[in-house]
Every structure is written in structure tokens, then in C-alpha cells.
Image (cartoon, rainbow, N blue to C red):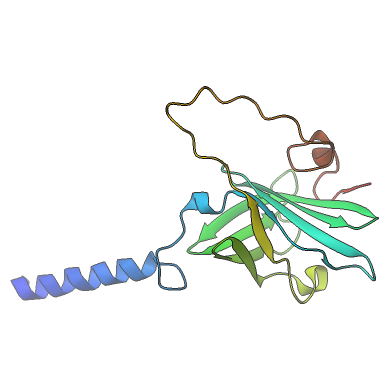
Length: 175
């Protein structure tokens, strides 16, 4: 049987261990799942030869994600998959329609309104990876507002919700 002071020490240590386990890599509170949901985009980066590329990432609340790589003047490659997070890191696992991985996962660290590359396939995404910044975050539902209206359809090929984006399939190229 533990004495009162021994039990207190155990509880204090357990509380500290829990706080460390639940904190982000910077020692602050870990981001909530919803902090990753939204649209993210990168600047034009050097790509294949002299062609620039722009990365866009759509992170849905249901763990679906779509990474679009726009190769300037050449078309867009889409990588669909699932996302997860641990602490302040977001992981995208590109996969085929059966859920099987199609390439190594991409991992970013959330820093404010930016996703900073942590791990990625350098032979595919280059030495700098795909740094992204938030361009849109879903609006929080408001209890007193009118029922949500369906969003207007995006232009063909402009994102993961567009029929043209799905037609290319995982890793498909659309021009």
C-alpha cells in the first residue's frame, strides 16, 4: 500500500507524462485535428527541368486528402490519399482506390499558418519538399445561421472536388 505522499508523487508524474505526451513538438499544446483541415498552397518552385510547379493540398475533415502538383504549361498530377496527424505533424499517405499506398508518405509540421516539410521522397519532390501555407480554412458552423447552401462547383480541374480532378485518378495527369 502506498503512503499519501507516494501516491501524490505518482499522480504528479503521471500528469506530467500526460502533458508531455499531449503537447506539440514545440512544448505547447498539440494542434486539434481541425487545425489541419482546409486548403493549403505553395509558391511556384523549381520542378522538372525548367518547368515550375505549384503544390496545392486539400485536407478534408473525413481524413481524405488530395495533393495537386501543377507543372506550369504541362498539366496537373493528382495524388489522392488519407491524412493523419500526431502532435503537430500532418502525414499524407497517397494511395490508390483500394487504399494501397502508391508512394512514401509526406510529412509536414504545422507552424502557425504554414506546413513545413519534415519527411518526403527527395527524388520525387526535390530537396526543399513542398512547403505550404494556408489559403482557406473551413468556416465554423454557426447555430443561428441559415442552413448551409451547397458551394458552387469549382471550375473543372481546379481541385479535389471537381469531376475533372477525380477523372485523372491517383497520380493521373490532366492537361
